[in-house]
Image (cartoon, rainbow, N blue to C red; front, side):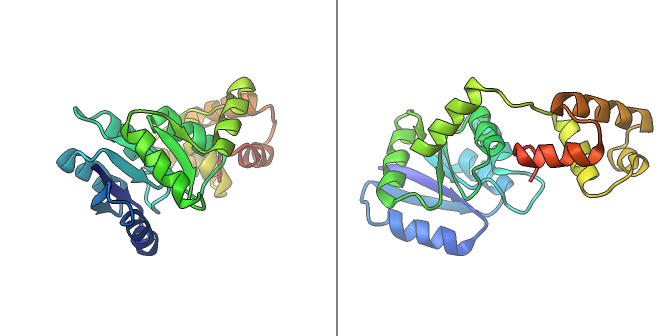
Length: 206
């Protein structure tokens, strides 16, 4: 029996998944989480074989954050990402966090069940399209930003000034300018507008 925890903040999605998986006698949904912290807590408490993890929960913490924390537990569950988000940065971030597999929510039921079985056996389970994109990304690396640089650029995208960014992140104005210089260099741009546009085009920002 493969014991599963569903981690998704949409009740309709969880209900649909539970109904789909109920048709297989070897699969048992033992818990549901509506937020990343809940998913980590259930993984620690119930030690499921697989956590089906969405990436976005409408909270500051993401599914990738929860995946990293679950994989750091003493008896870590396999994490299979099941999401609507398929940008290169989402895929790479989830895999780097320790996800065993990555599928989109429109994956056929038999593909999802096969992926759950693979994850439970400690194997990698990537949808073919996702695997192809991941390989392409690895062969042709895109620029990457540090967590702090991403925070700065996200605030820039929201229209914040350097002073406002400094106040929000509790850093100096000079540090903000330094981060921006690094961001411009990494993205090969020379302005705030171009940095935001390039980051969105490459999936570094949504």
